[in-house]
Length: 85
Image 1 (cartoon, helix red, strand yellow):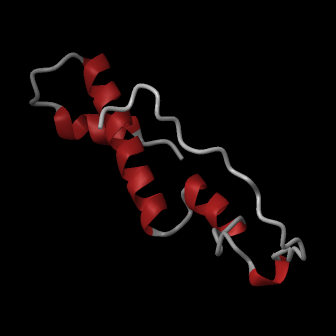
Image 2: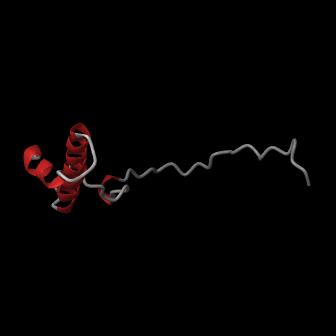
Image 3: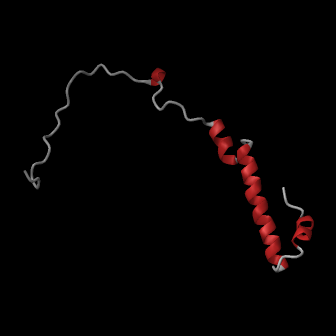
C-alpha cells in the first residue's frame, strides 16, 4: 500500500522544507506506521514465519533415543601444565 502523497503534502504547505524532503518524510512515516500496524495485527512477515514454525520444546520426549550402553567412557585427566596452585 502506498500513501496518497498529494493528500499529505497539502497538510505540509506551511513547512519550510523542499518538496522532495516532504515526499520522503511522508513515505518514511508511512512505512513506519505500516510496520507498526502489521506487527499489532500479527501480519508482519516475521510473525507469519513464527506461526508456521513455532518453537516447541527442544527435547520432545517422544523423539528421545535411549541407549543400552552402560560402559563408562575413560576421560583423560584435566591438564595440569600451566596451572598455578
